[in-house]
Image (cartoon, rainbow, N blue to C red; front, side, top):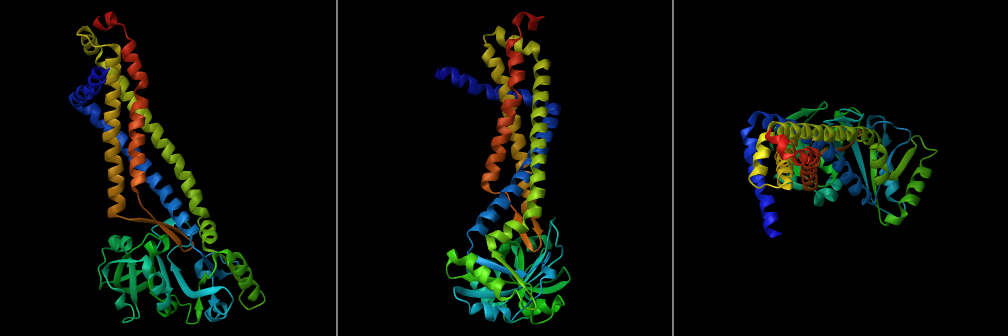
Length: 385
């Protein structure tokens, strides 16, 4: 039994040599498999990035206060003095006024999001930021100081000390950061008063407030209390838990990602068909070769395993090329997707890579089952003729 398993494993070397002998067919098949797995990996990375963002948002015990009936950050205008009134409410641990400025409110790729924040807010999120270049100490020294996410810095080839212009805002890079939180990993942080003037909203007005609650169990009650306080005021509010806000705002992104799943399914079907067709051509092209193998003592199982090995090798190599190309692209040219000021960075996690490679191997095996069976069942006498 042990020797039989060893013999089947050794067939992998024979299959590899067979693929090398047919360079053109093998190369074209590999390119097709790599293209399909590139698309599959990209779609999977997109889905996983949103899932991770939703999971992290669900763990956040904060409230988001916007102007009622707003449909875009630029249409939400709240008086900044609301923060002082909200901070006096029972159960409120902290209130942070935030100005948001985006280059596109709809669901789209490569969204640029500026967040105007106070020094207190920067201090509260400092634990979530990993500064890879520069220092936050440069923040108070310049009115146009910007803490830039690493993905944006790579995309624009920015370094500490550079000036840049994005979405109509000119700022000076004082630090480049990394973060595992979606909003920190995709937002450019600048001083609140600087963005208020640059965005022409004016001093004294902000887009939203982030309210940190002392007790996460009282989020709903606190949201009702805040909205009731300003229901009859000049500017009414809509307050939601941060997780609820993220899920609702990500609705259009969910629709887009839902459609992308069909692209992933199409890529899988294309790879399956391509590998199966390549295996059938290989079987038909070596009928005499298979007959000789059987003549010298190969069993039908060995003939079938030879074809299966070819499919597995093509699946592994094609998957490595396709997934590797996708990871390289996302690393060199980071992509962000956003909607109404909420954005996420598309990243391929280790789990995404493993699943893509696993799918490519499985497809190689499944696609060659029928060709392997067809090669093994052909009578030896017919093959010799």
